[in-house]
Structure formats: structure tokens, C-alpha cells
Image (cartoon, rainbow, N blue to C red; front, side):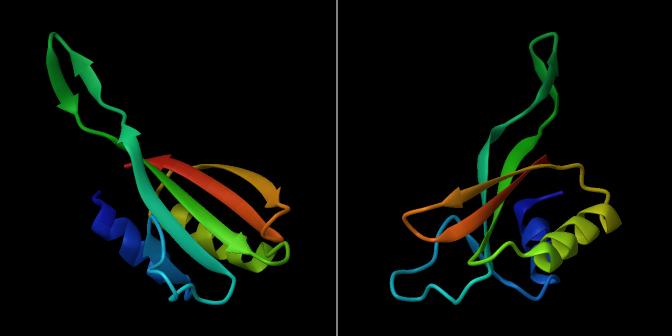
Length: 105
């Protein structure tokens, strides 16, 4: 799977989606999704990369705890057989919730 495919999958939630950040002055209303490549997670042996993996972070931002948006994201992950882990935090200075999903593609 490639990053372009992750974008298509995330678009199917109906939420606004951007890679890494929004253009200055073009940040949509909450909730929205940001996704980006963190690093690689390759399977190697005998000085050779046998499988190239990409660690991807997918961030859901919302002004309230948004269970419906979380369920929509998790449903499309399940439908596309994407393994994921999630964590949540509240960003006090921005008054918004962040649910971070991490996966390897």
C-alpha cells in the first residue's frame, strides 16, 4: 500500500484530509484529519531489505470527543485490513482533542 492509497481511504470518511499540515489560512473547521509518513519499518536480513514498510501517523482533530469520526476511521481501517494502534490527548492551548492512529503500510 502507498501513501496515495491511504489518502483515498481517509477521504472516504467524508472528513477533510491533508498531508502533514494545512496551507496557511486554509484550515477547515473541526473535525479533520492530518496524515504523514514518520519513518520506515523495513524487514531486513542478510544485508537486504525484503519488505519496505512505512510508518504512518493519522491524526484526527476535533473540538469535542468525536466517537462517530473515530468509528468511521476504524471501520475503514478494518475494511481495508489496516492494522492500527490509537492514543488520545487533549491539546489545552488549542482546545481540541487529538486521536493519533499509527500503522505501517
